[in-house]
Image (cartoon, rainbow, N blue to C red):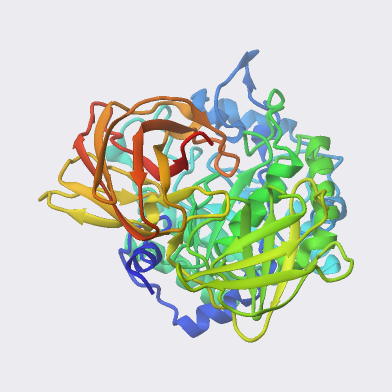
Length: 593
């Protein structure tokens, strides 16, 4: 394995390694078996916040729908009145489960208690719950438990373990409880969190996982106690990565974050269908079916699970645009689910220019987003391919493999239909003779471009206080010092003149970006000096909330094919906003293409 791949696999996904999980690897693997096979689940954010639906006292409240209490700083006494109005008489557990199952989802994670502190189940711990405090007087989680068991789906619960804006000792409500010195988080944790988690794990049958959230101020011991409680009450129940201190059975990416490369541990990403989690009546920015299908493929290609959210209304109805999109995803899954369920990450450490790859023993699934026409070319597959076929059916596709001795390049050419079988993601399955073997070094691709992802670089530090790290997408952040620099090795097959381009990332929701950095890129002994400026935006469907910025650094002439060494050294980093140089990749684009 080359040095770049070693560095990639060492990138933590979400939280620093503060402690080792209490469970053994064998125990964790046993718990994770069903989850690794599932790959696709439904998230449900449902609670009192569905009543105001993003509006308070006649005024729209910016931000996420389920955060309205916090963003509008609604006093507890006022927010509590919503419970008297909450009567979701149109709720039907079997309909919820049917929507998930028809989409191809294998598990459901529903908010049992979100940050507003309201329990969506019949809790004896607090009367502030859907059975005792609302005219509904039913326990939807019990009904969902029965419906999931009938349909063969696993039921899982979200539980907010630190933030609770209803409780004086919970985290987050600074408008009702401004004096932090009077707060006793341990009291809240002992008297509400632990007993409610115990209720969830003893009153609702087998639970697939507990999806904790926002660890905030939770201590190592408290996180460990929660994880141990879950595993004691239900040994097969998973604990999500957001329990804190790296004590989860798997890692959790940030909200709507999709890694741009493979990660070290099992991981999951939660994604919204529109822009919010809880129902918000003015949010009509629905993701297209194509984006959803491709995101799911991208997540699976990196060894992760795709947890896609719906936000039911106050009446207990999943919005129709959500239902329609999930039905369309389900049609694709009926034909192509083999390329998602039970798959592992692509053996290539980088993403292909045409799409992504998932794998099973002896098989590769090529998820082709950009259909090539009559011939499809893949570089770097060393194994002998016995057969290539479309998952949509039909005869095997003609193929030709060739090893180029002069460059060491392995080339696979597949004869394909002129038109894409699927507009969103056409899947070609390759059956190998023996195991799957590929070249892991970065290669110039059939589109003639070279992409050098930041997460596949070797990081060099000469600064005493090095801060550069990779976020959970694999994007460089906290690059604030010119004493840190990156290098790559790659294989070039076509000597030519290339434009050197840097791709950097803006902040979430496009709130800001920091440019003005001056860098030197050295390729084949030639220096290209340029400015990280805004020369245009790049469509970023896998992470649409983080805009990518294109910076044209200059051009370089490469006269010989073969292995190339590249360095990126900053001469000046602008850090007034403390973002610094947020690098996604360096690209070499043939001049004039």
